[in-house]
Image (cartoon, rainbow, N blue to C red; front, side, top):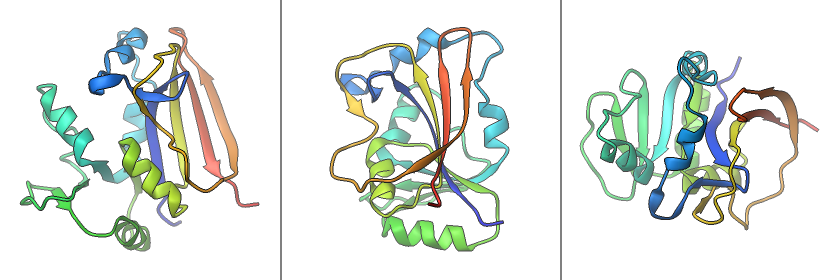
Length: 177
């Protein structure tokens, strides 16, 4: 079984992963005690994480430790920085990195954002699956998950899950037809 690149991300109903100024407050409307929307089970299926530098910095700015230090983590950046444990700051070609990772043995590869990384991967048809949690809110503006100018890609629906707080989780895989 070959490794897959899987985007696991939350988005507003109108397609934004953040409001202006990287505001993520809207995500809290679906918070529910004891409910992680399948995240813990999902992260057990991955051993590698790809995340953009802006997303990485945003996580750290929230006063928490980077959550993926138990995995091989690649922070995609233009500015070289020293490795911190399993966290590598990668300045090379993203397609080359993903091609190399997919050719190696291991679990799946989690693309944890942000939008720039997702859209770069889409340009080269490198995303195998999408697990998108749709938050029941229209935020109006901010950072769109999907940008214009990428190639069309057909997807196959794997599953849809509806949760009590109105979140709907869509799971798609890249179509083989």
